Length: 152
Image 1 (cartoon, rainbow, N blue to C red):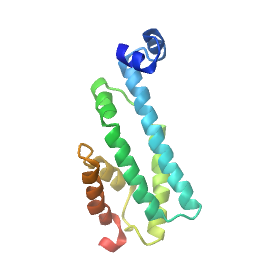
Image 2: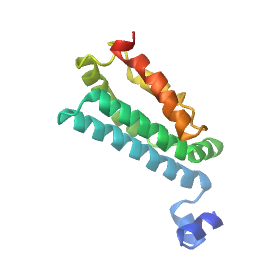
Image 3: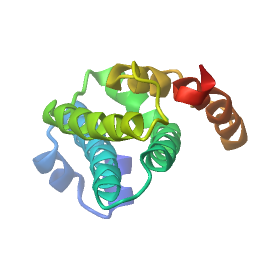
């Protein structure tokens, strides 16, 4: 906590006033990460509503989420280590926006009709986050077509 306070340019007492425990601090960081990802999904859905191609938005979204997860891998590990969690309402919001994107992709004929939100979560959960970006990009290039109507 001392090192974090120093890096943030605040007194350690200030840090403890806002985050009494390490779990509180890590939970706040995790919540911020989840909120950013939720906003990314909602913004992609907004762009699709405005006329952008759903599959283009889904592909960019998955790539962005994987990159953010790779960058925040240490935060997630720390959160698991101290038992930190985040507000579940972000999951509900993200799932609703992702459902909208999937439905649009299916309506366009780009996504297979049985693809679900759970499938995208599984895709994200299996991403090789500990590998270099080139490997993650190659993995996505090989994996994402399994979701498309043309691939089956």
